[in-house]
Length: 123
Image (tube, rainbow, N blue to C red; front, side):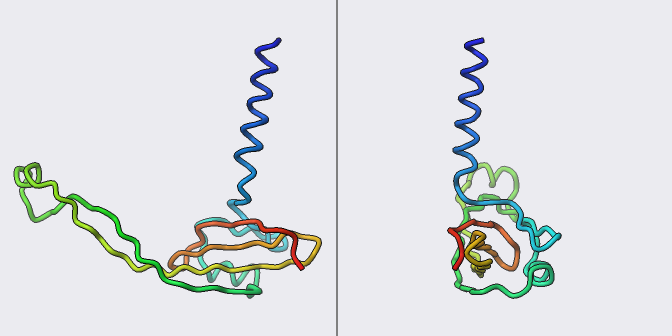
């Protein structure tokens, strides 16, 4: 009995922690749903124009250690990483639904929805 109660309390605490970051995986526009991974064009079609848009560019640098022109022996001997640079366009869209609903922020990377963040109540 006591063990069950402890598991229940721990699971409730974990649920509160996991759900408290303010991000979501989907946004409802009327009776339609927009999910992480959707495109900007789908978002515009389903939800209309955002109230505010911020656009900036970031350089993503990642290490890639495979060089296809080398043989397997050379590859094992020289594992120097190759740095890849990619320019990413990031857009932050704001949807303000008024004082009775939360403001939603949508983060796009190269036109693909990556995050949906809930803000405070709108104005």
